[in-house]
Length: 297
Image (cartoon, rainbow, N blue to C red):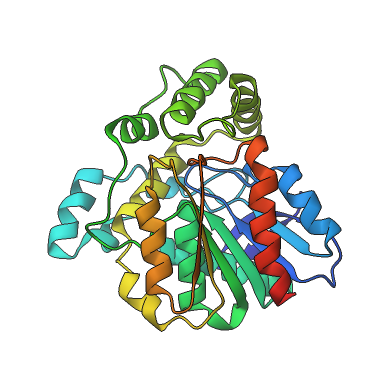
């Protein structure tokens, strides 16, 4: 896969579809490599004539690793939320990750693009639109939050599953942790992924690149990121917020809040969909994405 030197780091990326097609940039969530975007989602977009771009966020997959920054001290960062020093104590912020995404679009001559991001990637999507409005044609923040303090948080089970350390740094332990996490915050029937589906995806991700230190720095970026919810009121970009009704990690009211803050944003809530992208849910998600995106081709 190719890489690009943008924003002073190397970003691994992959493109699909015609170079002349309307670009759709897909931004992965916390811990997620670009392969977390399934081909079953990408191929129908390409068939519709879109130029689809997916990439590894910094510190994950095959993109630049910030190992020189060490492991962040989360106690200091959390304490810094009270005195306003959290941002300077984190290795980097979501703002920097948004700048990476915008710079990649420029490098690939893919502006303005429709930008879709899941979870942390949905936060980055909002920040790309806020920080680089000329690079964006429309946005689809997905299973994400406005970042406004006071919104509902994850269930205890979902929070524990997200932050739990695997029993060991082994392929089997990582797969087992992925299954446990999915059952805590993944989709309900009829979309629920099978153990085999979860295991296959987790195994492929582990084989490609397992970077636990990068995961810890990404988490610090989420926690230390200055709140941006008030800025959403000034956005002037077509927006569809997509969320699942049974998301136990970032509950649906968090996505709904983003839609209410962004002028004229559309909010779509999918019944029985959680904080994942199981194969059984892909067709209905594609229907919503294409119905929205086709207005801005």
